[in-house]
Image 1 (cartoon, one colour):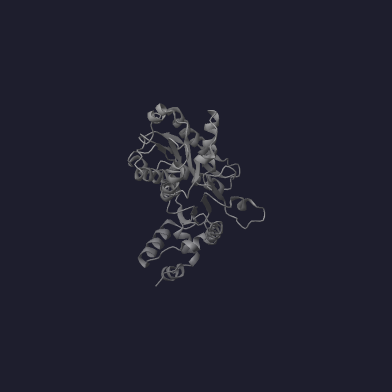
Image 2: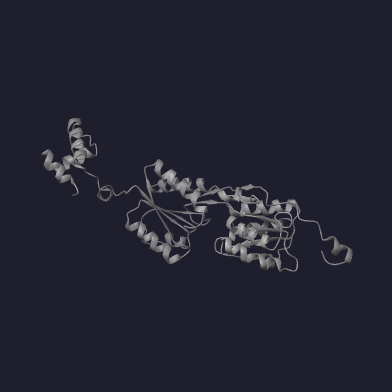
Length: 340
């Protein structure tokens, strides 16, 4: 049977308001009364109602987090950062995923508001402008991760990260560099890829840009299209590490060596990237730091601060064993006068 404040008040012979104040260490209650009521509550098995307390204080000490895809390992580091920062401020986290479905994203956010969360963090929002509309029904602050247009956002400069990794391949001597991308979430990386090639006066070959689903299977299916090109690439820059692993697997099945025949790079620097064979050259996104900064920004908004600036964090190029200089031209083709 649930023990209520009224039950404790009846046992102690005081009013329910006195019990409530004693349990909340109100300064108007004497120390002896506090100790007596708090011990009595413990003996009777009283458990405070978080919901009731949130209704009184208009605060629930909870944060709702909506992520794009719960199955994507990139979000492990992000959630570690979010939960660590939230716990440091005595906040709990409610997690949900919308799997790249705008309608589901909206439903998740409405659910968070019904649960009386104090604020919401969204990664990879598909409807971020909805939260800025003057007639929206969202009264709690919202922080969006990885948005360059939303005013309350913590993002990684993925354009810069893509430039870094393509520059690395160019410095190794590659000129036929392919890009396996994911259309909805990969536009910034595609922009960085194009910019790096243009900076080196290398024409963009659209046949070397292949789309995928952002997973291992997408990398596998991209390889046949790239290898069927009249002039196949000597290097492949992938949307993320999962795609890169799929690409490497598909190349191996066709007896291509990485990086001796074709170099492959990823993006994200998942834990597995350092332990894959060959260890993956990639771009490290500071996912834990992004999560921590997002919580810090949200807490500022919860406190009512309006002058909160968006943050753009820098990625880091991590060079490992999956990239090398391109193989030399085919000697037999040169001797026979063929194209190389």
